[in-house]
Image 1 (cartoon, rainbow, N blue to C red):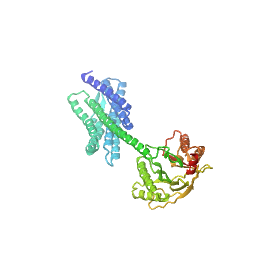
Image 2: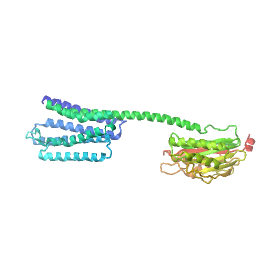
Image 3: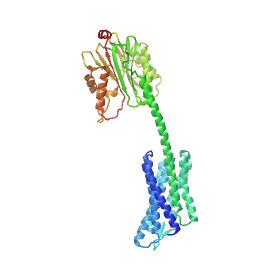
Image 4: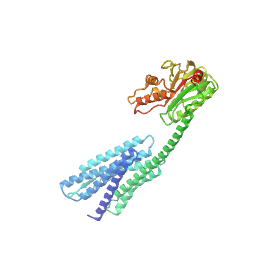
Length: 487
């Protein structure tokens, strides 16, 4: 073995080892996108095949025999085929990164045609010695048409250079440098190889440039992932704060009015996301009237939560003016429609309960039916008249109705997240199951009633994810006279 062949063996062995380690590393990378993994697994595997076949051909070169001749022809065919595919892959990568407007598909087809031409010419060479031939002792010789063996690769690489120049603003600087090194290094190696014949500097240049390009791309992806993680952590922190802020805006301390014995009230909200669009509210309009609100904003997440806050404040403000429910809904709708570029809407049930008489005046803007239990009866749906949702159209007039709550009566209001809770079989919980759950605990306190409904929904849904906010409120009217007698 000549010193040049010895150096070549070392170069190729190092190249195979480095490429093999790169395949293992990219396969185990947890922060690397799947398509990037698949690309570099194939890319480095082809380089390994290319340089391994090159080494095998060199070791078989000059050894006579028909079996050796067949083997060396196959090995050389695979070597040239792999080199064409390597050029094709690097060209596709540069095409993907530069993203040329409206011509990406055409360029990709152009590359595929060049690869096809390369394969066809390589097959022809096996029968006509177009690229190379082997003499009687199986020594490798280049033919007059050898330049054609690199024609497709050269055209691909020239096209890639044009793309890198034309769309340089779209390629990160680190990756652009890596691409140029990969494109230019083999040319420099060819010049060096001409001065030091026999040593395969082109293989060394190909492997080195490939590793550098891989490192640049993975480093870019890793840094991008870290930035995304920082942003995600920041958003998580802000969402956690938003969740706490939203929870604090809803009445959440019970008993809510320890000094008022005329009623017993309890409410809960379980958002589907960190922040929800549902909201409930209850507040003393004056010493003799209790305002009760249940609402559901269209959409989910932060936009719905912001819309919810606005709606909640408007309802409470207009209710505090002593307006009737139909007037509260109309005024809130008018204000919402003034500035509603996103065309969001909210369903609202609003009631004003007279704490002396038990008379409840209520209005419904597209919300779910309330459920009422009279003192001597069971929970039943109250199919009240629905008006248009708040935010649906300006100038809408709303109606209102009256319910009489005698001492011992209980009223349950909720959002559609209860009735529309869905299990793994895509079945809805439904209002019938909800009413059944209410009746199981109808003699209990409002808190226990809500816990019963929540448990029933949770049991029905099972492991299926929660798709909608789950919000409920129950009030038991005790009455002033009854409260005094119990005292």
